Length: 179
Image 1 (cartoon, rainbow, N blue to C red):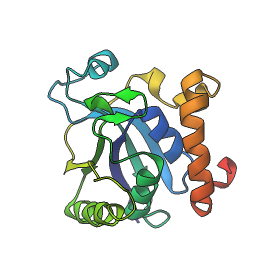
Image 2 (image 1 turned 135 degrees about the horizontal axis):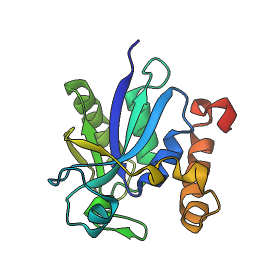
Image 3 (image 1 turned 60 degrees about the horizontal axis):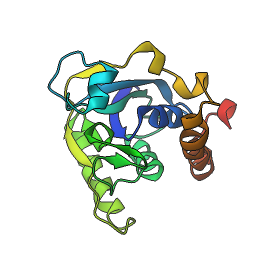
Image 4 (image 1 turned 30 degrees about the vertical axis):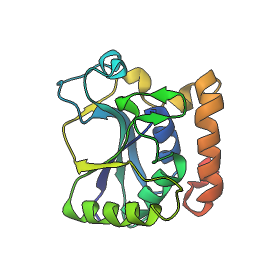
């Protein structure tokens, strides 16, 4: 079966990247930017909130190993989809909860999962659902950030707990070498 692509934003891309790198069926997980007006944004412009982009991950996955629905279930477990333009201390539109769909099938699946998640969370889901816009790969130093900097403060205190939660909650989906 052919690989599929998913583009998701749910706070800092370091967290998303670190989590999805643990999941079986991932061909590639890449940090980047999507959803803004400025072509070729830089991290500084995105972080300033002036470009309109969200920090996202672009995931290439094998749907015969892990489904798009399962990727979204992981997504809604690892971040809070009820906080507008914020995840913890990360505040701004660049940290918004967003699903960029690449096909009508992904759009329909996302709508269903969002509706189901509305019954799980105590507050309304604010996750944006939009067609996949232009995507820009983040700078090289953002790629594999958690793998390369596990003891950095943000990684140790924010990223690691999310990775641990997903390892426990989705143990059957974790790559053997990551378990």
